[in-house]
Image (cartoon, rainbow, N blue to C red; front, side, top):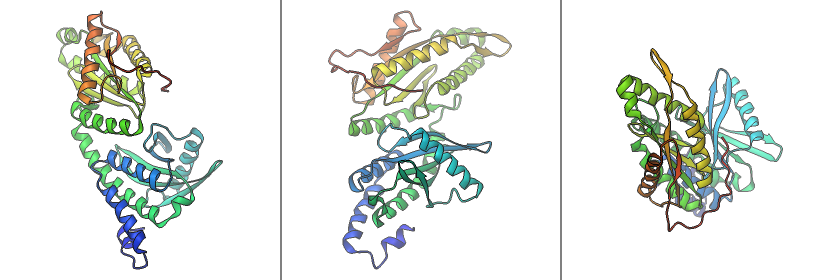
Length: 346
């Protein structure tokens, strides 16, 4: 359904056109892909009484279609495993019949707890993006059809824009995100966490005695180790988590939905994995290294990105001062009591 043709239709009731116009203005006010998704999520919840719309990231490799990540709009919740498998099978069938990938094409899945619809939203970060939602009486209206068409179109545009931005925000050596992208990502995550009363954590990692490695083996070998560290961190973390090379031998990890206890568990797992790993250096025996890890949590240790980075950095230096190869949680005397009931699965 083309947005302009529907909006200009003569038989569209004036009040309906006015309501749609205000919703369209809300969506078009978005300044990034992340903000677009959040605004669309708000409209779905408040206007269409729908809080079950998932954004899925899909990769097809070697003839196998797989959902590598999914996120319920406005939440950390992922799509159920059974529905995930059913969607993967349906997409594979559509791929074989060459019907998948058409912009604006809505398809259906019959599932045990009801019928679901899905629509392809273009590519983002070298993966296909698919929106999935449960059918309901609120989602059969002209308003929803128009908003979905607009969301679909804007997703295509922003996906292309952010792919370009990603290349600008990518560290050339490790191919992780760089410190520039960390700032904008934290701004968006703080807004989302404030709105939905959620938490997230920063893990600050510094390689211990890395200067000695550069001095003994040379900077090319040091660069090789940094790339290997980046690859190992990618394997250890979830698709939804952000990994950034902050500078030199420093890395920052953004853990979505993780409170202090969950972040400490992840930090310890990272510390242990890096300490046990044998890093390969050309024509040399593999070497081992350790890391010092600091952790800060939102809102426990700050509500501004500068406060959070500073707190994580300070706790990392505390690890250095206490003998290195440790995980230290930031301290804040005036922080409110924080009880953990969150488990993060990897």
